[in-house]
Structures are given as structure tokens and as C-alpha cells.
Image (cartoon, rainbow, N blue to C red; front, side, top):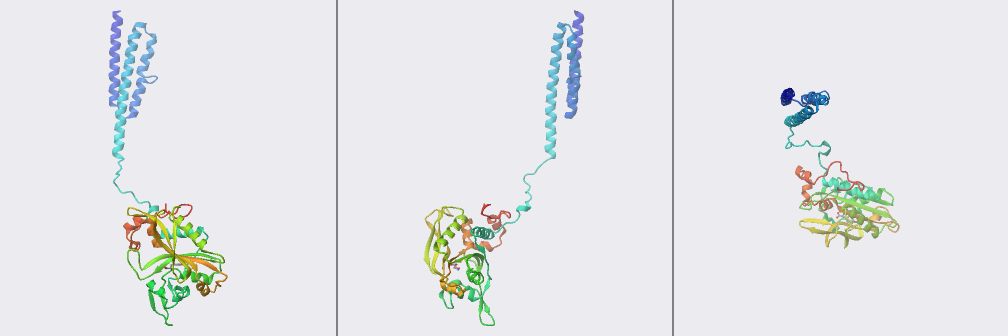
Length: 371
Ligand code: DAH
């Protein structure tokens, strides 16, 4: 019995020594790989502790009980030290990674080249407007900016000395050799004449373009933009004009809650003539186009005057049609809440960053007009 106790005492001492040895190895392990090797040497199939456990079967029951408990305790202890060291090493590895892989989030992000630059709101609106009319089956027309008096005025039923000429603040050129003075076109309506002279009805055309008048304030600049529309065939009538405008405004302002008001007016080149208003409400400082009881004038329109048809060689008894002219700058200001027209032409980078559009957001009725 004494022998057994002695023997057990020695064995326990051996276990304590083994525990110390493995613990020291674990503490000194400087990598997860080294730690894994220590684990295999101690607890793997052929590990020192596993082999000890295998000897239990051959021991007398008394001894097995005490020794078994001791070895299992050793095993638990080694497992605990292993787990703790593993956490320490993992934390250290993470700290090291964090220290080397620093990311300075305050550094400016490099600009995406595909998103560099901005589309001017006017170019955007020009595209939007033409996309809508093209979808309705209109062709796109154009005419010269330096225009003769005939195309800008006379052919449009504004003969010399007509009072309407005074309203246009026209830029005149010096007289040509024949004494006639060219003008910077004051309206895109010259395209009406040029189109009817060169195309057979049925005609369905819109002409966006630059126009010029000697005027400058918050809502006027010497150069501005209009879009002219002309429809000529044998039956085009006021209902068609109204329907065209309704489809256009609802698409352009992206709302179905829009009302129009036709006010009788006078333009020399139309008979009957209307100015057209659209409805809006004010929300704080903002103008919101759509349902509302306030009105904004947006365009001039009417049935093409018989004299204009005649001036273009068309018989007013056979052909008729409607026309309208609208300020592109004005509807751009209304749609995008831009308060001062002059800023359109100031080439201020901060302004274009604010009001401009991403270069690849090309407006279309399918993809969305303004997004
Ligand atoms: N040309 C006119 C202007 O600049 C606008 C206009 C009014 C155009 C009536 C038209 C129209 O085609 O029918 O003030």
C-alpha cells in the first residue's frame, strides 16, 4: 500500500511537472502555428496527455480513479491555458494588422472620372424638352441666328413700322450694301417660315434655339433660349394645340396635377392667339408646379395667321395649323428652382456643381427625365 501511495505521489509530481512544461511552452509560443503544434503534442492522438489517458485501462481501479481524475484535470488546465494564449495571440495579430493597414478616412476620395463635370441645367432641359416632343412625333428644326428682317419680322406678319417690333429690343447689324439691316433673331419663330418654305405639309416641327434681345435683369439676359413649335396640315386645330401642351407640361414637370389657363392675347403671326399659364402653389420660398390656384405665364401660342401661310406659299383655304413659342430658360428655372437667370451664363463652378446634372444621366421618357 505504501508503495502504491509512493508511486502515486511520484506520478502526481510527474503530472505537475508535465503541466508546468506544457504551460511554459504555451506561454512562450509566439504564433498560432506554434501553439497548434504544442496542442497536438499534448492533446493530439499521440500527445503526451492522450497517452497517459490510454494507460488508465491497465491500472487497478483505485489508482485509475485518482490518476484518471488528475490527468483529466491536467487536460482541462492545458486546454484553458491554450485557449487563453490563443486569444492573446489572435488579438496581437489583429492589432498588428490594424497598425499596418491604416485607412485615413479624412483623405479626400478620388473623383470618379465617369462622374466628373456637370451638364448645365439648360442643356439638360433642352434634352428633356426635345425628348418629349420627339416622342410625340415632332421633328427637330433649326434656323440662322443672324437673320434677315424678312424672316424675323415681315414674313411673320410684322411689317415695317408694326408696333410689335418695338417690343423686341432688337439687336440690329450695320446696313448691308443694299441698305437692309440684318438682326440677331429675337425669336425662334423665324424657323416657322424657313420650315414652311422648304417642307410640304403635314409639318410637325419643334425648334429649340438661341434668341437675342437687348435686355438684362433677374429674368432677362441679352441671349436666351426659346423652343418654337409648328404643326401644319389640313385639320390641326386648337384642341390639338391644347392636347399637345397638356401632354408636354405633364411630362416635363413630371406631374399629372397640372392645370392650364388660356388667356386671349395678340401676336401678329397667329389668329386666334393665346398666352398660356400653368398652375402652381408656393411652399415657403419654393414654387411647386402642379395643383394650385396661382398661375404662371409660360408661353405664347395660337392658330397660324392666314397671312403667314400665304407668305410661305401655302393656301389658307387648304392648310391650317397651330404654333407656340416658349422660353426654355424660364421653364428650366421653374422646374429646378433656379432664382436668377443671369447665373446661367456666369460660368461659376460652384453654381454648376449645385444645379448641374451627372454626365451620363441622359434624359429620356423611358429612363426618366430628371431623376
Ligand atoms: N415669338 C413669340 C415671342 O418671342 C412667342 C410666340 C407666341 C411664338 C405665339 C409662337 C406663337 O409661335 O404662336 O414672344
